[in-house]
Image 1 (spheres, one colour):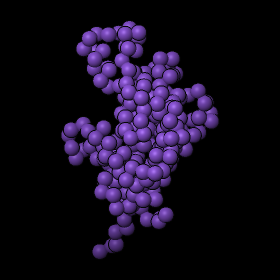
Image 2 (image 1 turned 120 degrees about the vertical axis):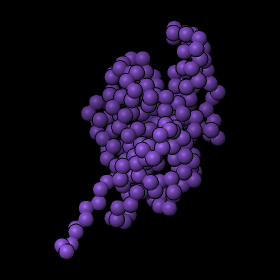
Image 3 (image 1 turned 180 degrees about the vertical axis):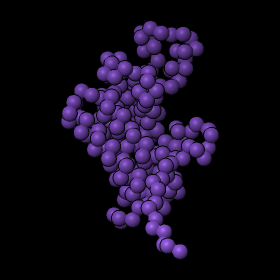
Image 4 (image 1 turned 90 degrees about the vertical axis):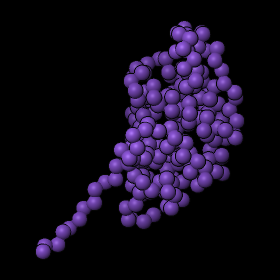
Amino acid sequence: MSSIRTPITIRCHGAASWIAKASTAAKRDPDDLDAQFIFYWIAFNALYGQPKYLDDRVKEWKDIEEFLRTAIRLGKSEIGEQLRDIKHQAQAIIEDPFLIRDSWKQWHQKKILDKAGREKTRTPHWTSETSLHDLFSRLYVLHNQLFHGCSTDGGSKNRESLEPAVAVLGQLIPLFRNLVREHGEGEPFLDTLPYPPSEDRIIAPS
């Protein structure tokens, strides 16, 4: 890989640092799923992030969708193989009623607060054709629960969601990073960094 700084190398360098952070957190405390999820997501964000100051609309999910399409284009077979390896964890996430955006909308509208009432909402089984989009739509709900302070650190209510989520991110995010590093040059979506680092320049005396 070239030592010249490009948007791809900068994205991959940042992602690698947070993947390493997640690995370190797991070694220090395997039960700290919150920290592992957060660090893996930051690594993911390093790969898909776009400059929000260029557009006042909130469109992060659209950025994630575009990144997933790009990732599939860069390595469809590799992603398919990885998804087969984590099929059981992915299916657990897909079928989790507490990771479905429309379920939360329905519970809010109908004022359903008890767990038994909420658990009646179910989703179709995971399929390889739609898994990546559906999988990350669920993970994005979990991301919002953690990043917006709607979950307690080490709390018991979302352990069943976090355990398979960390396992899935731990496999897919390093794969995404490798695909971007090896094949990402020339992809327009990956070429615009949200906060590009400043360049050091030597100004010759006049």
